[in-house]
Length: 99
Image: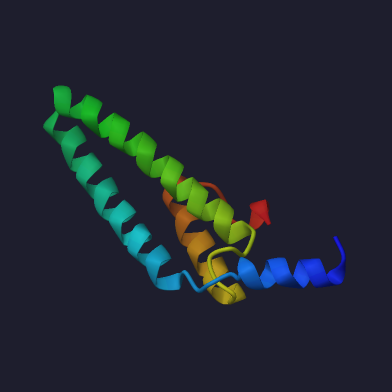
């Protein structure tokens, strides 16, 4: 790939700011995490539903952590670090160790 082809691809697939969508997704995940913990406290079959929900939440939060590690959340390094640290705190994986 030469420089002209790379420039054309870069313009076509330009990275857009995803900051607010990312924080919306994180807020949803935190709300779902609280809901799952409440379902666990109810016991019975609700616990099975909560375990399934927790699996989805942890996967989702890990994917956000992965995107923050590769600076795909935002152009801002500080925003990527903030998202990475929050996600790392939720799933107990240190963000700085992944960088």
